[in-house]
Length: 116
Image (tube, rainbow, N blue to C red):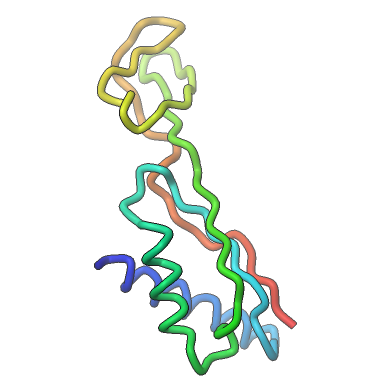
């Protein structure tokens, strides 16, 4: 259910920026959501459609891009992309270290808002 709260916040930000630009309509919104995020595209889209009714963003196209998971080796600083299921078994290809810091994969952000 946290998709509802996050989608509300996304809509607030979009409307704030659209109004500051004196926009009449929001045409599209491009979001980036990390692969490790708990956010489900389907629910974000459904909540956005419901929450945006009666606003200038009501008919906006919501595009969601997924950011791959990237880890950085704590020993040699090598960065590697991994699948969600491979994280527990990840080993650095350069130094065989098994300790990593997350570089990307949990984020969500508004990348672009198109208005008229």
